[in-house]
Length: 492
Image 1 (cartoon, rainbow, N blue to C red):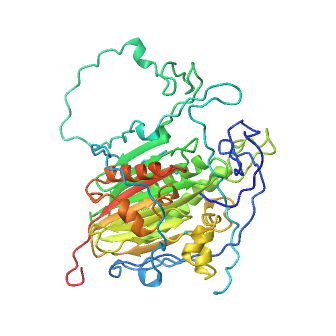
Image 2 (image 1 turned 120 degrees about the vertical axis):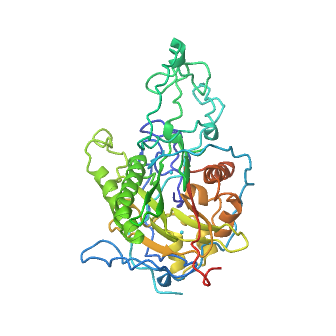
Image 3 (image 1 turned 135 degrees about the vertical axis):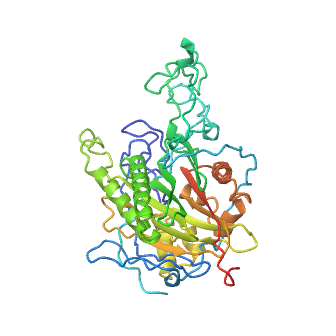
């Protein structure tokens, strides 16, 4: 999640768990072993976002209560700026072989991861060490032959749990299934294609761990779809998401998407992202049907997610500190970004460097980035110390300055509301995707033209774009189609 200067430590394997390392790693990606000291970086506040379309017509959200950790809710007129961009990153050709998948149903799912006044003091950036590359199909130093890992793009899609509406007519009883043969329960290793997989998830023949359910996850509802993939370099998926839909008090639909990215240098980042996504999704599903303003509901959801991540640090005996005093023991941490689409209103909220993009159906009109990173680069640009191209070219560009976790010092959720005057698609994603399409124009080029009508297929194409570009991080993207509400002469 962050790229800071990384001195060589001279190790080829982790002293704690023997996981292969790169010379620039600061912490082991498997067990979190502390390989070097983490330098601090200057940080400061950043400002959200870019307003699009016409003013919001919702009633004002409630103001901040005394003693609250939150900032005041924001409105489009309060959010100056332009979209991120300024330089085109090299991108791989967009894949067009995305498989068509039938629409699923379900509710919430958690998947298995930028000359002015000086910047005021802020928490030191957290760093995520570079993922460790694995030698595929080559002999190791001890003579063993390391087998190639399976391509995560070929992973089996996990269907969502079906909703349980009461049927009008009881279905006829189904015939009992034929008994499966005894050998059908045996799972064959995806690495050696010969050994049987034991109940612990490892091959009895070659010893390789098998792909886990969270390595590749997909969900699709009527108004939203999401895909999360482990990528090609990480040993596990530390991203998570929650997508769902509900109804407002007037009966109109509301669609939500939450995406979280675990901070790899922290303890149990996969648990942090999963807890945050689940808590934020549940909070929104409880608040929106009560008539809570969507922007206030988004703020409350981020606070709930932060509390869920904080609670992980209070669980004793989870990080193995009593067995290894050198093990890195940062509190569990993650970033969060989310969107709510309801009655022609688009609300976004975030903490960290995961992003929301707006891509109109009419590609002749400009796209926009709707969030501003809590990162070193964003602070340098906001302070006028660097232009955007210089800041994002720096090795420190992606060091985050805001996150959810017990050691985040102060919770500062960002929220913004927009009312687009045209239809389009909302792209909610982690840096595992936007690193390969950073500017809004780049993202618009790789989002398929039919994303609004085939959001799952479009999300699969975007994940494939990141994998084709190198897949150096976990990749998660949720797509929410937005249909503009006709407002008369003011609409474009």
